[in-house]
Length: 403
Ligand code: EZ4
Ligand code: CO
Image (tube, rainbow, N blue to C red; front, side):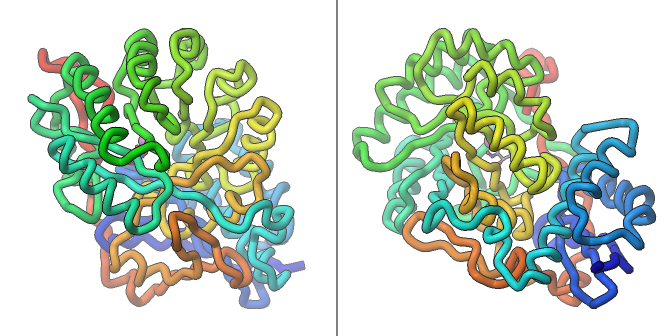
């Protein structure tokens, strides 16, 4: 058996923080797993180093399911973003090792390719509707078949999803959270106009997406969905916070705009009702935040029974290790829908050399054995951790709100 003899956590900040688990077997095979939890990185690093790694040494690297169950059931305290990101990192690294030992790209172990490539969507944003549409046009010129549109809300000094930089969007922008102000009425007035103008200027061949980022109540979301129906969105994302899964019944009752949810979910229990009652069209759970490849495959299998397709989260706070793992998953899973893709900076790409590639609006994980991604530890060591938080959000009267 390939015995695990060493495991350690590497924290690096090539423009933003990433937490990576590296597991090694007695034969010198190593595997990587992403454990990055934006704004709470060191909690996961400690959970792994102080609590899980000591139990990992000596185990059979091939027993992936058993390791998953051991750390999930064995904790007694189940689920939660910190614990599930740590389990995800172990799970991903063990799949990487198994595929390397097999000499196959990971997707071959997951049933093989169900498609030739994976459709991704890019992020277009701007301070005005015109700027956002111009940026969407540049994505379409690069071959993208799907683009997410986010435009600044008139009257608000900053809006989530709208970057200061033209190429890269990085919301974790300060060592104490930036305070932002939110107005739902201003937002609800601005979005339908954005998509009407986008259809007018960009036509109907491109898929258009939009992220509400948990800012609405169910009835507000129902109304927005209705107002956007004529613009034929690919999806409307995270319309409301989804702790209350049953709330989606109300949204569903009012609109045929397809709904996506779940980038912050960490287990199948967070989306069980949403899927079983067919309250959503796309499930956004991803490798790093939902217990790794092993658990994500169970989510996808449940979703497949109810015509729900996958749409994995793929923002810049998900490292190239997650991106690679997601692409192997996407290529193999029968009910794949779309994959989010935000470019990492050149520094991040240099720290994590990888085989996945983009062409013509689609991606492929490549044919290297394992995940096809590595970490350059010497380069990683030149970028020490820097505390960075996502902003917080308040209503105009000062009440705390959802960012
Ligand atoms: O704000 O990943 O759809 N993508 C998103 C992201 C999230 C960040 C939070 O860490 O909503 O950009
Ligand atoms: Co989102």
